[in-house]
Image (cartoon, rainbow, N blue to C red; front, top):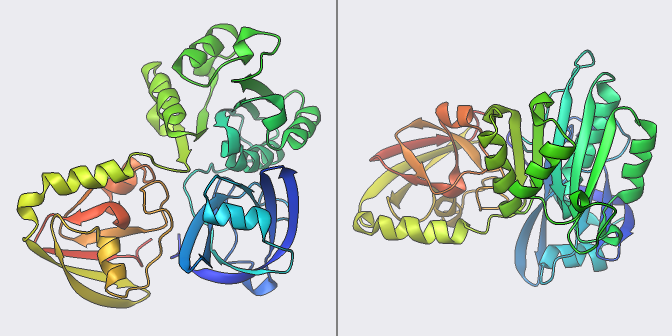
Length: 361
């Protein structure tokens, strides 16, 4: 995993998928092909100055690495600066700053594998799932994929036609179960929201969870945590569960709680050394003050970051000396944390000296 960097790319195609959602294809020039190689399920980050504010937003790739396409879906959010810009103002031929692909919401494909995949998605959470579904069905001819997809109504199902085409093509290996919250279908199983109760209904009437080899979850935080907890309670190995959060509603509360808990250490300083792109710089940072990333950015450092909420891994780096605390972590695997990797946007020093290395990936 290399350090992510921004590159200038041109918009190749814009398709109106729904009234409030566009899919955007980017033109990857031959000299950037290697930099923008990706795994199914990964995301890219856009950088744009809008209304005199630098905005960074991450979007999952909905295309497959096996396609001649490099595409994301951008759903317009009320008050969202970048999503509104993308849906209303972005045009074919425009240039945008795009960071190289990142993310752990992936699966290593194997042509000889015979696995059963189960995915839970809600709304635009289908975006990375579509990339995974296409890649796995194409690459593993003996594997099956079951998608539990939650939406408000049939009209709000993103990529409905493409999913139906995949279902028809892989009739024996791909199953879709639609769950609608505002429209009743033929059975109660298809009505409601994806939560622990719905998982229990699915387990009783339709899906044998114990026969599944890998699990993917993407959608609202409440759905993700509810399904994840249900699976673990049913004996599913946590290592077989991958989830992707688009936003973290608790990050602001976590920051405030951390600072309040460390008020007494607000004057205790740490000497922090940060290594990036074969260079290093030093700064002084209070134990209970800014995160390491924020402090470094204020000092003028050019470090990779996207969400600042602990849900992506763009600001991932390794602690090679000293110790730190993280407020929250929804992106790093347990084995990564055990090996010393941290999310610098969530990290605070807990020793007199800390050395953070972005180059060790």
